[in-house]
Amino acid sequence: MSAQQPVEPICVKVNDAARMIGVGRTKLYELISSGQLETVKIGKATRITTASLHALVNRKRF
Image (cartoon, rainbow, N blue to C red; front, top):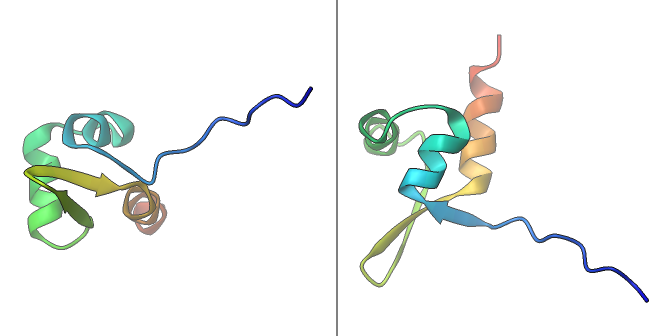
């Protein structure tokens, strides 16, 4: 039998995104407003793409 591989989400909730990069909701919304994070609207829900979270962290490395 083959074990199923865990699936990495392509977008996450705002609270989860903030937790993933270690910032608060306010800072996350600032990053969204400044265009540093990409959002997706699904109905009324706002989701943050995990690709944009990875890209942000890579840009901030020093």
